[in-house]
Amino acid sequence: MVQYTLAQNPEVILTVSGKDSAKAREKAMDQLIELMDAGKLATELADGFSPQQFIEVKDPGSASVSDEDAVTQAVQVLSNLATLKLKVQESRTEALEVRAQVDVLFSDETVSEDEIARLKEGFKSLKTFAQANLRYREARSQAEQARAILDQALQSPEPDAKSEKHPADKPSSAGSGPDKPASDKSAEKPNK
Image (cartoon, rainbow, N blue to C red; front, side, top):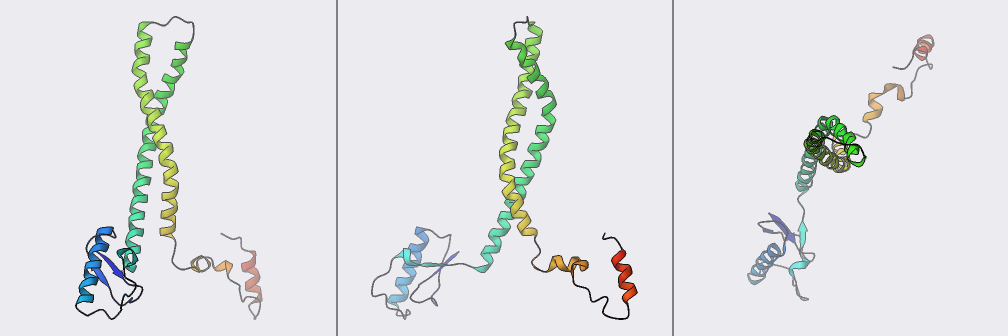
């Protein structure tokens, strides 16, 4: 559902099914005309009105839904990164062994058919590793943004939360009363 209002009369809310689109705005325009024809619209639109002039009314809850969608997507991106990392790690050793053997093809040494056959078999693991490594590097750059989204979502809503967790950061009233020796002992203790 999408809701529209008019700049000339913000109290009027027109609700249309679907998302904000040209078609939805046309439906809202039909509702507006019906209100005008029925005499229920107090505002005169002397200069005319087009569907592009509607103002979309954003539901305050829709922002949290989009934030939740972003968090869900961020977790999926990070999960994909974890899967790719495992795939790269599993195929790395065998692929690097095959890569070391590739240099034989560029030398003047004689190579047996058996060695060539093993090399050709190894190309599959080399290809798997190379492709997984490329996908991993691409996913890693995308995952940086996903990590930032999660970090933002995990932040405490209270700005003073850090100072409450570390009482040593707060100014102390020690030394102003008869407890002076006790404050000297606490000053000697190492910070944990």
